[in-house]
Amino acid sequence: MKKFKQPANQHGKNTTQNALNKIFRFCAYQERSHSEVKTKLFEYGLGSAEVDAILSDLITEGFLNEERFAKAFAGGKFRITKWGKLKIQRELESSGVSPRNIASGLAEIDRSEYSKTLLGLVKKKSNQIIEENIFKKKNKVARFVIGKGYEPVLVWEIVNDFIA
Image (cartoon, rainbow, N blue to C red; front, side, top):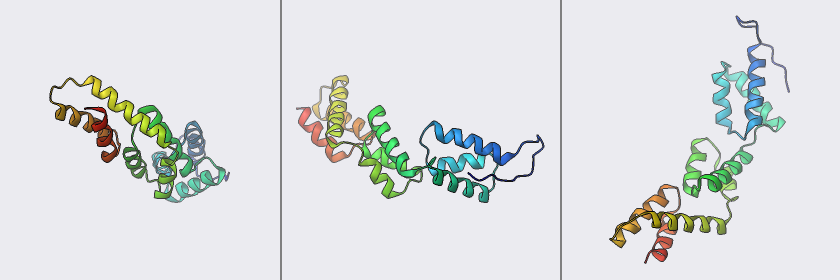
């Protein structure tokens, strides 16, 4: 890792070195997107040239890997919060992750697990909703699951099969 020379600030500390120490801990704690780290470095008061140099070093040293981030994010959001692929994709896009890495992250989600989770969400929500009108009930269940980021075509297929 390069040592950056920075004039001491009013507190007598090397700003860039402090930023480096903080960002190493920030990246070591959990997987981070490039844009997240870049924003954090700017918050530390660094200039564009320093931020770009540090980002480059973090990537070279293996602290920052967009594909690894996309896989960890997609897997975690699916398993823990039961998000669908559409919502995960939108969040990764808003984090500035490249389309290739988004596809790689979404590929980590097992199809059979995805279907089981979708069916489980439909069953659970269906049991929670007390509605006499079958069409209103189907609509409420479908809207809930679609809101979690599942593909509408899949959702309606399962809702129509499950709620008769």
